[in-house]
Image (cartoon, rainbow, N blue to C red; front, side):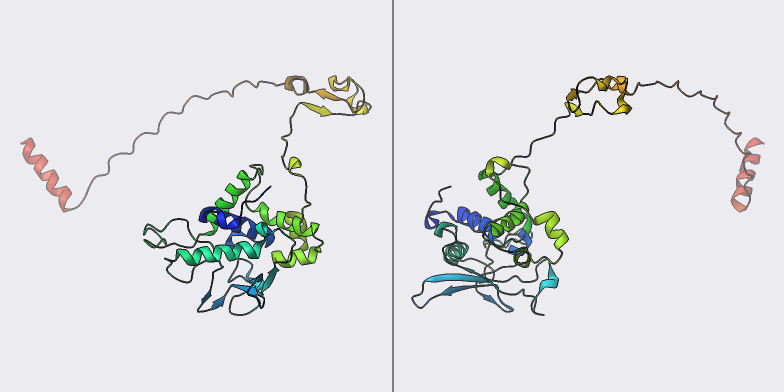
Length: 296
């Protein structure tokens, strides 16, 4: 698919482009991306752009701060190890991660109006003052919002609706596999330690777009072996071995027997009410006195 020049994109489109490239090429979660920011905060940096002697962008170094998989932290400060993504021609300029992130950085700097050192993925509109959205300032997007935007990008790109936003993580692993990465290298990028989890949930192969659709199973027939002796005399034994035969009515396979309703027993009489308890005490005696006076 032909990509429009990055410089001509609106901020919203550039944000979606950087989000989708990051999710796939970095094999990360939405929650990982909300830990990134441009520039330097008090505790350090999460992104660092690399330039050569002629001030030409050559790549970007990225690390996460307190991500979900905390056991992979490289330092006690909460940062993961740096990972470098070079501008090396593996991707065209319009799909190069470092190039697109730098373009997003330049656009964010021009926008300004943030409460602190800006996060990489900022809101499209300024906050309204509700919840954690400062009024009149751009705010960092949360993981659920990033996942929703990723899902929207996938739908616009023709990905079937039954693929969730988290599928981009496995898609990134499949992309790396086509580029010659080993399973161990892909697990390192995903920050996975369990090969079982990787093979069960993330190890996927790249397939043509036409094969992405998931057909629904139609319960129209049942494949049976007519030579099976256990089917002798059964209405399902008709036809040759291995044929797909329509299922007979359910009543032919398992007749429905209507059981008579259970016998109802007469309702037992209600127990007699207990006799009234005679009250005692000063109030009871006063009440009895008033009753006696009224009777005379």
